[in-house]
Length: 280
Image 1 (spheres, rainbow, N blue to C red):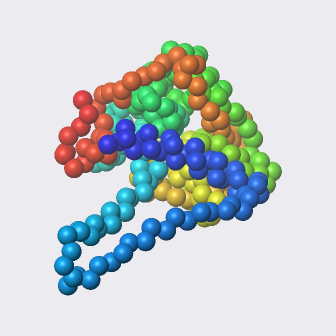
Image 2 (tube, one colour):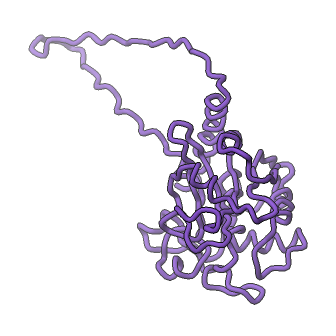
Image 3 (cartoon, helix red, strand yellow):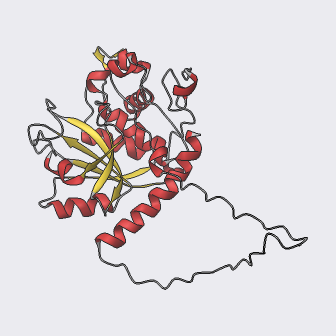
């Protein structure tokens, strides 16, 4: 089910970006719409007739593109509670440090890779890939430059940047790209994140009407998979960092050197909640 949702989400994500660009940059043109009306002649139910009246088909539910977005958790508490998207890695030590203390960047990259491609990986698999293809030594937060290098290895075109001078510029930036990885800090604004010196999160599916984005936050179940006002996230961008965001511009499968087919290991998939079983 998740794989089907994921494919639908990629289609909807592309359409959402196109629509957002049209709305943001004022290029929407009036469209002429043709409506086809099908008239059905209703027969007198008391009349004798050999013709059956066919009932109209039930409307088909519109797929929710949010259902196809991956949103891994990084830490031990979510794993202990067996929350969906939590994994065994949350309670593990890697290269001398607890993954839950530094794994947010790898959760973000795993969310992007698994959501936007035909492939799939967990944060710990992405962690190991980063160690293999970059100079990242493990056991701590990954830098912007090494994240860019990792994402390039996975076939993505990404761009790093500083906090835009105005909220309007930031809004246009997020609307123009299918995903944006940002660094937030409660030192800049604590209205949403508290006691958070620095934390990577990812934005998907910007909505121009509400000026919200779908947030994946690996560190807080109350934030993960929520629609949040983009202005709130703009204010919280960590300005003491070299960069504040990484836009995900596009993905080219031919440039993906990994093509990781399955998110392995032990973790709780969304559909596992009903069955009580974990991915082995």
